[in-house]
Amino acid sequence: MKWKSRNIRELAKIVCGDTEYFRYRSSSYITEFFQDCDLDYVHDGSTRWSWVASRLEEVLVLPHSTPTVPPDAFIRIIRSALDKGDAQDGDPDRNKALAALNTVLAREGWEAFYDEHGIGQLRNGATNTIVQMANPHRPLSPAEVERRELLTTYLEKCSEDELTEEVLLPLFRQLGFHRITAAGHKDKALEYGKDVWMKYILPTLHVLYFGIQVKKGKLDSAGVGKGGSANVAEIHNQVSMMLGHEIFDSELNRRVLVDHAFIVAGGEITKAARNWLGNKLDAAKRSQIMFMDRNDVLDLFIVTNLPLPTNALPLKIDIDPFEDIPF
Figure 1 (tube, helix red, strand yellow):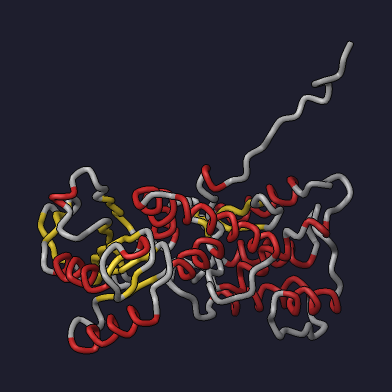
Figure 2: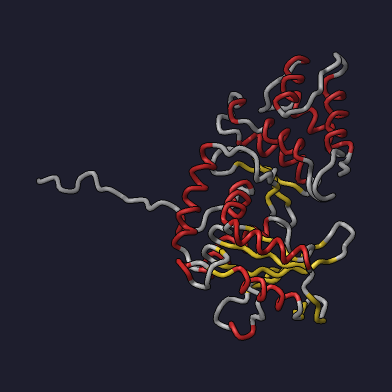
């Protein structure tokens, strides 16, 4: 990712605190700032803003998921610069600091903002997509654990359509998929094994098409419907049907085949079901079919910082302080 020199210089001065509303950092504190961002940079005593600008250029070319998404280290730098603990006189809520930073970021097509937990986030100004360090295996913060528990409760009571529309569609949009279309269950006869189809554009501009087969409950190798679960063999047959049926891409005005398929379960995929499915995928279509269970969905949804479905939020009860008080 390449930034204009002018914008890198101004961002370096923000990190150094040479800009109003940002904490001034001497040589040792600049080193401390980068260490807090998990970067092993030690200031060498040269001109502060020039040295920081050189380090920012190095950070921007670090390996990252796609050419259009900043590296995780850069996101950590933005979050550290917006730390509410560094509020300065005249800007207790850091709105002025945020505006100053956004003046620089906007020239490169980005926008910073504070989320509901007061943590600095970065989003693409054109697509409105929030950039996240989406490592689903990292430890969750206490706030994220609480949100995960609320979402778990929601998945236990929601319908299959609600799982698709309220959880999976926002999740896959955030992960960079395009043209996400849900078949729903009103036109089940036209579904051909697909609950959702979507496409993903590679950095080379080649397009891959994906289908999703969604099941709300548990997937196992027992009989269909036992204990509210679904039989994995039936799901495998539906996915095979999906891979063999064409879909119409209105953006290209032609019919295309689905390249890959996801099996997504709102509950657990049992060990027996995983073993059965693994044996099938070893024999054929191993690279085409992937599966995710509830834990995979929960972790991805939480680390991408998506808002919870409305029905998953705890009820707020307004209490009248004067109720039941006799006059």
